[in-house]
Length: 86
Image (cartoon, rainbow, N blue to C red):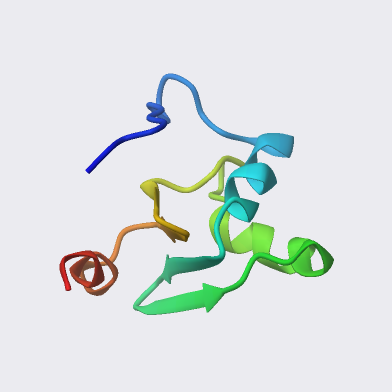
């Protein structure tokens, strides 16, 4: 695997206006939300609906956030990360 961009969210969080450009780089996003996984295709027209899904209480991009290929994985879920190996 080639890592193109790596950022330590504790030292340099992604917040505010920086969040959406990260999300829209993906063709689809899979977000761990409680016990379910929410999937969406980033769309500028629905930005206000999607940002709360990927933003934590601190107002920054939830961690972990990983862009692999054209899919953005946000938050932690065993089920979500099992999809990476399959």
